[in-house]
Image (tube, rainbow, N blue to C red; front, top):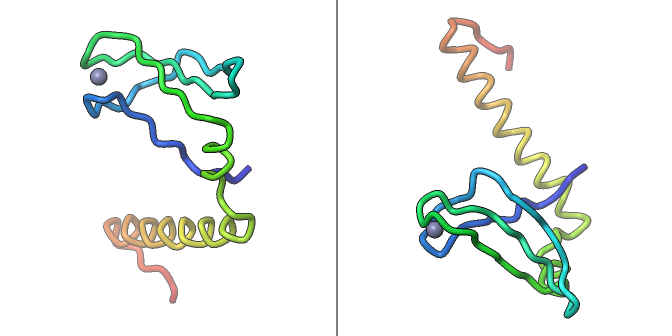
Length: 90
Ligand SMILES: [Zn+2]
């Protein structure tokens, strides 16, 4: 399944290790609940479902993202193999 990563961060900038809960409110917002280890408090981020809709990738953009990722991955693989003294055929 292809999807766009949702960037989560506390207002202090800390990225949560894990999400505690994801839920929905009566006024159609998605709520993400996580613990900020830096602030030592529970953080609730909300996002309207229309915002979520706007953040969804375009259907035609998905294969490009995948291709970009594949190119990155094979470049990283080639580098790793090179570090082991193995050369990839062009
Ligand atoms: Zn924080």
